[in-house]
Image (cartoon, rainbow, N blue to C red):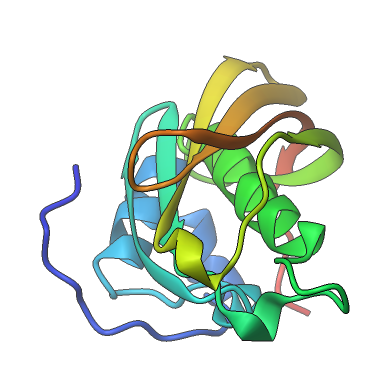
Length: 165
């Protein structure tokens, strides 16, 4: 459900009571529409836009020299952040109001180098199974030509929305 528009991006925390009142898919759609803030971590990876459908979440970002490791290629943490976010949010997209997730573990495999010449990349997270306490998802990071850059899997803990405190 990428409308093609780029709403203003803000970063921060959504108040717990507001978060608890929304289903996962409603929260993500509001986030991508600019109605609630994105995670502050997304500032670090050059986030440009995203979209959410039940079971499928996409994050897009542009890698640049600020993401390089000392040998002149994009650090694996860039890929890990995008895939962890897309896969975890795919789990979130399946949760009812009052429930959230946290990553228990994830594994990624890097299959192609990334540099500032790669251009915009697309991290796709797809929920595989979401139960009352555990959710699993898989993810792929693609370049603008659809070439696979990395792939991964995650296991998430499903829990009640934490109370403000």
